[in-house]
Amino acid sequence: MNELKYCKRCLYPSTKPDLWFKNGICGACHAFERRLTYDWENGPSVLRQIISENKINPKYDCIVPVSGGKDSTYQAWKLLKEGYNPLCVTAPTDQLTPLGRQNIENLKKIGCDYVEISVNQSVRQKINRYGFFNVGDIQWPEHLLIYTIPVHAAVLFKIPIIVWGECPQREYGAGKPEDASLKYFDRRVLEEYGSLNGLRVSDLLMIDGVDEKDLYFYEYPSSDLVEEIGVKGLYLDNYFPWNGIANVTIAQSVGFKTYDKPILGTIANYENLDNYVHGIHDYLKYLKFGFSRATDVACNLIRRNLLSRTDAIELVKQNDGVFPAYYMDKTLQEILSIYNISIDEFLAQCDEYTNYDLFVQDSCGELVLRPDGSPTLNGDFNSINF
Ligand SMILES: [Zn+2]
Image (cartoon, rainbow, N blue to C red; front, side):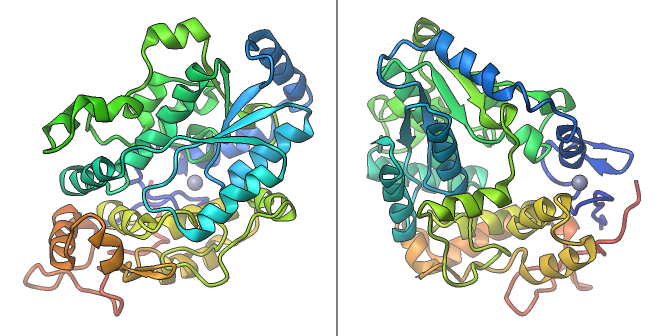
């Protein structure tokens, strides 16, 4: 049995994919420290110059990929406030919730034009199912389309600049240390960090009922097209300080709505409100890596001195990896039925993806379950051994 090792400062474990550590401190904490020394003064003028040098559409300055969440609401608001005319582009989530739809509609109210590109629902559901059974990611189509559809929109509308929000390599320490100062999002970043789990778009042709013609928006646009338009994906947090917690307050001030009840498996009611399958995704993350959404939120709060590491441990113990019997107002059965997955199939597959080394086992090697039905994490959060 392995005991999980944690960052000395936050609660990220050594099992987090692509996370690097130096002196017992994780890449996300190192990147956060480095941000405090950024020269923010020149950020706005640098962004203005890049946008004006690359503008070819006479009306729109940039594309903003949006989900309607607190961060994308902030992105749209910030760019409008800076005097830009952004075109908001959405690749809708796998099972959009009514609250997610309401927050998308709100973006139009704050003063943006808005385009939504949706893909064939029945093909998508087949890919969801395939992703769940083959690479353990039921949100695989969403994880790809949120990145490819804004690039398609950039090409279609001839708007070269795409302004993403935070750079995940900086915000979450995902990836090589040198990528913590990443400036551009491009095909290389998608392929390296896009959570594609080794599954390629061309592999989807193996799925019964999926043809090449169904996969247009799943493919990254051709290099020729991308170069012809001069598509550049920027991160807003390279030009303005980024604070995901403050973004909630700003987004709420312009109509963004949070959920009015606790959300299972996390400690915040202001994120992941737009997709019923988040709970399943987060549970699988817990089974594979021994941490999940509550840890992600807690780590952000710890870094900003909004939560002590000691209190965070208690919150994470109570909330991380809770069995997703429901998510928001839908039961697990309702959510899975869209993909023709039974509860028994779900449980068997979860077992397949569980890293037994991370969880407490009885003398027969069976997992010791918590009252909610989820496996019990092995070890103590205070065990910092490196
Ligand atoms: Zn850390």
